[in-house]
Length: 220
Image 1: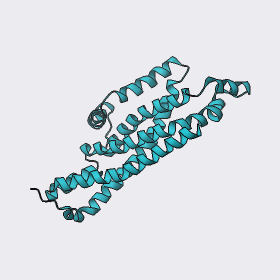
Image 2 (image 1 turned 120 degrees about the horizontal axis):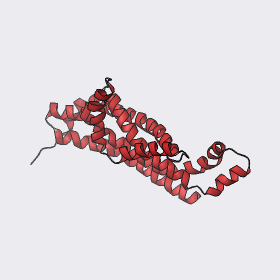
Image 3 (image 1 turned 90 degrees about the vertical axis):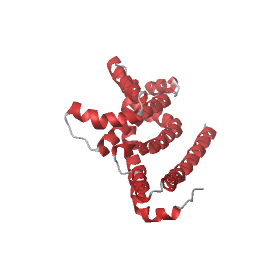
């Protein structure tokens, strides 16, 4: 029988905390950047210009339809060769995950916008508003309310996706746990602790999102 010993992990506590800090900070960066890419993709896909719509669609489908792990490896090993620039593991990971998340955020934002009745836009036009003003003052305030649960869920997925950056030696929680596991020869305890850490963060967030969904459903 295997003898569990979680006490040995105490000596690696700062390693885990540093990794957790990198993971949380990295998540904030890729969520913010992903939302920016998502806005561009959503408005591009709704553009009246066919060329802009085609570019937006190509971006969305290219990143949604390829595995994120493949994208991470491609951005780190292939893109620097093609672009002729050096790229650190953190930069490559941030760019790949931001664009990947942005492709999903794009569809969430686009779906939220098109879910608003066209009569709202017609009402804005009747009041003398430009299309941009109608979007900012009438459509988006209503659409954002509907987008929030889906955006939160995608952000939670982004948090979990950060575990993949360890393949590029980004010192996140998973990478630091690998270091601890190799040093302590206690992989079961190490990876169990990591799983508990992720669950301790994600379960409360998931509960908050579900409660938010219920409140929004009631308010509508």
